[in-house]
Length: 156
Image 1 (tube, rainbow, N blue to C red):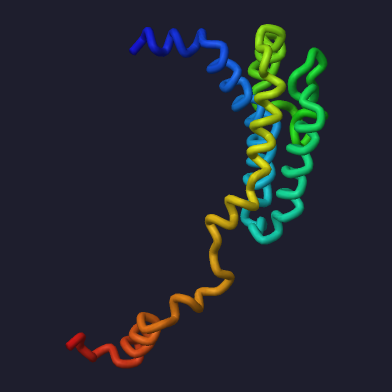
Image 2 (cartoon, helix red, strand yellow):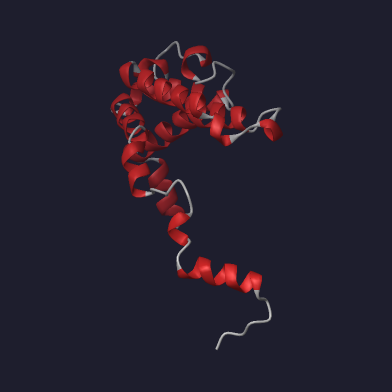
């Protein structure tokens, strides 16, 4: 098992994948979590997060158009992090920055990953939910209403 881990940590494709995941977390995930778990969390209504989600999409598109925002010699949290604030783990970003010359496919993988992150409409269609609960109001709903009105009735 130790050998497998050693091999994985010295495997160029695996290293590049881990770098992509780390860069995504620094540029999108942590800024997003800072926003939704921020100071006024009790006042946050999930239905009002539409503009934030549009900002996530816009930032993903910006990275797709210009991966040097995350993979270059002059990476900056101002342009690389979705909220422009300090990286959650700056040492990770700087380590990837130093390693990037030895990772030939990092930019292409980063672009592919961010493109995949934008595939949400297809995911939403697969996870579709009805806007109301009317489809659950059939026989079971009628039974529940009857039972509530007549709690002494039995199930014969």
